[in-house]
Length: 120
Image 1: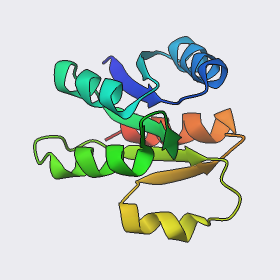
Image 2: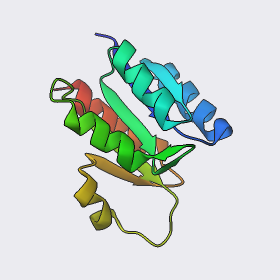
Image 3: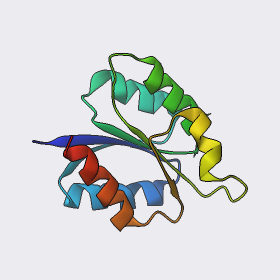
């Protein structure tokens, strides 16, 4: 079964690296650098999981997570990654992220988290 992931990240180099890694591991990737691009991709494609940066161009990962969670028909997990040094993982529970990764993201941890979704 093919799985599809939306990667929302405003750093183009990191976005490309993550997408290349995920593609090599069997995921179909959709990429966005802005909140608007991300929501448009979610409306037009079947997405199984969202991986978003905390800070996006023209928006935030918080807003994207809230948008996904408010769509009752979208029962998909939202993973967040951040390099913001002054926040802790507990701070993100408020936003209902399903998993939080601190940058630099360890690709092995990301793969393990995604594999757990594939088993659902």
